[in-house]
Image (spheres, rainbow, N blue to C red):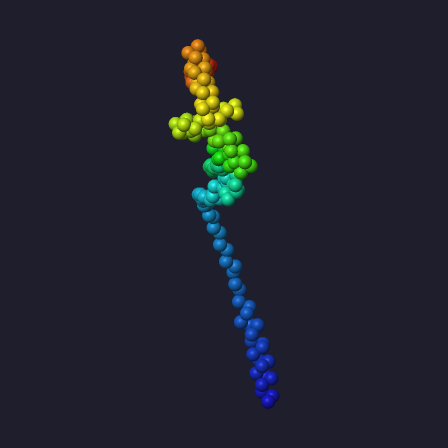
Length: 177
């Protein structure tokens, strides 16, 4: 048993002799030149011009909704509007008048449409005029048409006045250019 401590003492004394070798440090020098060329791709969000919603569907209104939008990478524009349907309003007004018992006023309202007016004249039941109905209304309408023809002979018609006004505006715009 005494031999184990003696062997252990010899082993420990010999260990330092192995570790005393001289080691030189390793020195490494390097120079690196690098040129990096990179390209970045930017992914932009999708176009998002949103047209306004016009909730007129299913309602008892005489309007038509129109909306639209345009989007570019830089600018987005959207707009919307409603348009009145005058014929729809005329029909609703005539129905309301008829429901209230005002049948002559309802027919008079419908006669504001030229197609209805012509149909009534062709059927021999002219539209009411200044409270007159039947043959008296037909005579009043014929008298008014004769007066309008005489006025047209004297001066420019409405279409001619519109054409002359449009031509003068075009000439003014050409002059400004």
